[in-house]
Length: 168
Image (tube, rainbow, N blue to C red; front, side, top):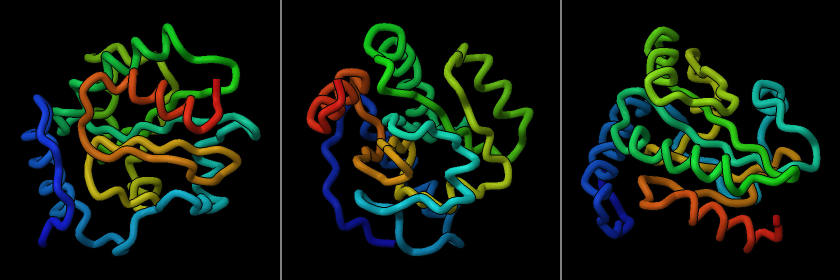
């Protein structure tokens, strides 16, 4: 596999690169294309995520084996506690194949936002991100934005992204 994008390395950069490579091995049987901005989520996946109509959902994909995911989640939780409005919903998709691993990881990080445990890998296969962590902005079952890979101070980036998307 040849990585065609240039990634700016931050304190999480090395972990992100390792996660990208690991994901390419882990999900190598997935379709070749990832969901992009403007794509529509299938009705089956929309039912699983249960995003209320008219709300913007910040959908964060993570797993217990993803070190950068574990580093980002506390900042995501801080963002949720200080910045979310009635127009925004933050939810996680834990892609661990073993439910016990998922639950243990979520307890370890005291995750208190809604999480869909994707043990059957249906949601991750549908979105097919090129790396982890992966964050998508979804409104009315359409992808309106996304960020792939570890990002320092993700809460600030989410706030900025939502502002650019017209969500206050």
